[in-house]
Image 1 (cartoon, rainbow, N blue to C red):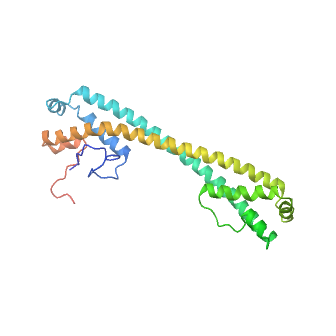
Image 2: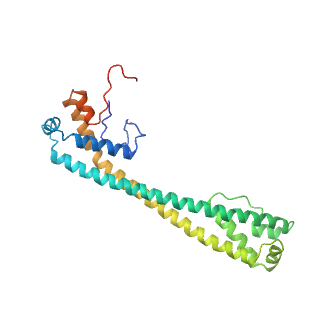
Image 3: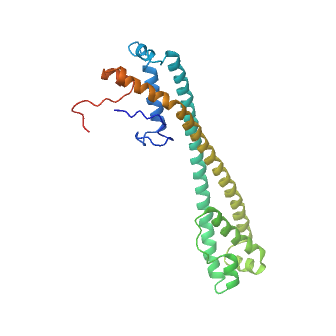
Length: 236
């Protein structure tokens, strides 16, 4: 039998309903229940316990709003993923060239403790974006700031034009990172808005289901409302 907890399973606490039901599945289940509850053989029984056609129409209007909110949520996540892909591609592009330049610098500045420390040549690879960005930015800025470093770098084909291009790329990826953060925030906000709307409607759905299980001993009627009825002989 379907669980009839009065908390939204997506965000509610202490519910025993299947936690893996998606928001889209839940919205679809509620839509079926509210729509078919208006059938002639079902509605009069529900009206007797206070669930009127006007109430069902209002619930269906909420379902329509939920469907729109769900579409917005999907669009926002699509935009987030697109921005994340753009960020990852840009970072990989910069990191590949930086790795090449740093390996060349290891040779050019071998034994030069000042250069190795200042440029961060022997620093461990950074995973977090902020630390990685600082490492790469410092490498190129320090080369430009020191004439001796710049001369040695040019000797291994790390030219001023290459450094300028990398600094431009770093500015670009910083902008992409900010855009990605914005998209992440908007996607989460869209999810919270949708789930809050489900929180409002879900108890009305569970109330309908609870009444239906009492009012309709006919399995076929229950199934019209989307209630899965376990029959004798069904697999556990």
